[in-house]
Amino acid sequence: MPKPEGMDRRTGFLKKNLETLLPQKRVEYQNKKLRGIIQYAYKHSVAFKHKLDSAGLKPTDIQTVKDLEKIPITKKSDLVELQKQNPPFGGLEGVPIQSLRRIYISPGPINEPGEMEYQELGWAQGMVAGGFRPGDIVINTFSYHLVPFALHMVDNSLHRVGCITLPTGVGNTEQQVNLLKNFKATGFCGTPSFLLNIAEKAEEMKLDLRKDLNIQVGFVAAEMLPESLRSKLEEKFGMILRQSYGTADIGCLGYECMLKNGMHVPDDKIVEIVDPETGKQLPPGKTGEIVATTFNKVYPLIRFGTGDLSILTETRCPCGRTSPRLVKILGRVDQVTKVRGVFVHPGQAGEVGSKHPQIAKYQVVVTRKEHKDEMTFRVELKEETLQPEKLKEEIERSIRDVMKVRGEVQFVPKGTIPDEAKKIDDQRTWE
Ligand SMILES: [Zn+2]
Image 1 (cartoon, rainbow, N blue to C red):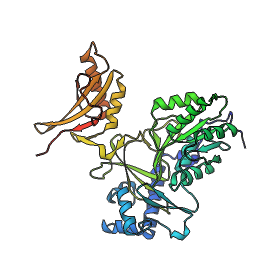
Image 2 (cartoon, rainbow, N blue to C red; image 1 turned 180 degrees about the horizontal axis):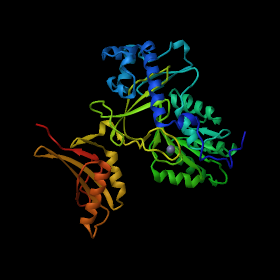
Image 3 (spheres, rainbow, N blue to C red; image 1 turned 120 degrees about the vertical axis):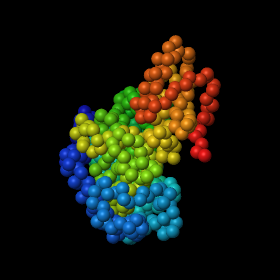
Image 4 (cartoon, protein in one colour; image 1 turned 135 degrees about the vertical axis):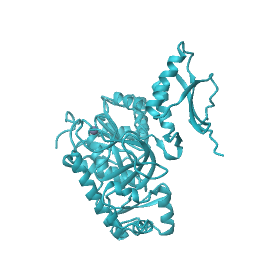
């Protein structure tokens, strides 16, 4: 086995043929897998059969990804409800309980069937894309207790890549630092904030992060990873840090490659971006809810609504992977507001804010005048600007670029926007 030091971490795939499928082949592959899982789930999952029957659909009505639109979305709250009516799994499972290896419980609470042989590709694909290699010794600091992520998903995926896992779980930062040091561990799995805790603890223990520790790669999830935090951690440890996105229910839905330009959708999932009101698919570039379908026969979730917002892009990634990418996770569906027919959300407002360092505080106010929506971006500046008109124009251009809708900037005196103010204040009334 090659030593992790000095190896190529920047190129490579888990399943090259699959990850680099030509676009037309990818469409055919996905449609074929989709037809397979629809047939299977209809036959084996009581809940899915009921869903299709109630919608007046037959499995053969779903031939392509576009046809998925016909099936109503299943939300997390639906899973809870189904499981109450029909315990323990709500009829969502695709195999008898006796053939499971483990049962997990994720927040909700939602009972989850854990398959005998872990099949999911996504997290392992993300680890390889993020530089993990066979022979890496990795601490897995996610929680192993009841929830499926650390044990089922991350631990199994590390094994699939060929890594050696230290199943440390959460907490005990000092012990984690000692383990990292003693085993010269090369990889970290956990949240970005916990990696920062480790850095701070190690520094407190008078260790040199680059010399006394040997972390070369990090795989983070379950929290946002701001670019400022990523570069800080990469710099401190001299490491490569990449993030993934998914949910405890359906698994991985996106992972970053070396190029950090969004998150590649794994090849064993279908991700749609839909209008949260109608459930209809939106084209690439539009903001909407992430709705996912897995090919996992043990737990065949079809059109699972994550409640998270994102944008899908199909532009080619120079890394060679041909899967579409989630641009980034923008926030939660329940925080969106529709302005002149376009969804706007706090994450976008934050992006506008972060483009202009002069801004101290901001708040978006949506009003209605003569039956037309108006969006005002109220801004408190760190200090007065000599060219307010110029700055106003620049911010308004950012609003158009990021939020895809026009808004007017209004400078307000310091202290006008309360600390606890909602990022988007919808003041419209509809009488
Ligand atoms: Zn890529």
